Length: 120
Image (cartoon, rainbow, N blue to C red; front, side, top):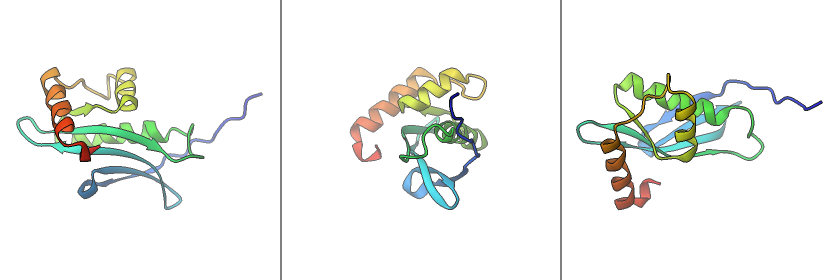
């Protein structure tokens, strides 16, 4: 019989100044979405990379981060552009929680990331 990993909802915190949405368990950062705020009209939150620390995989942390990222964007009234492959896959699996960004907005985000690799 396969052993089940207990899923405990992590504490999700936005560190906007550093472009990180962090997941904490027991006061320790165990996962992060690196992102940037794309200015312009319309503005957007752009997810570029999702990482879960070794030993914390398989507990739903990455999914909780992406869900929290979309919720944060929803509260701000801006779309999400998921350039991060994990975030894009999560969005495709959860279309009710992750509205698709317009293609032109996604292209603008990719262009901005290419011209500013420090955002990754």
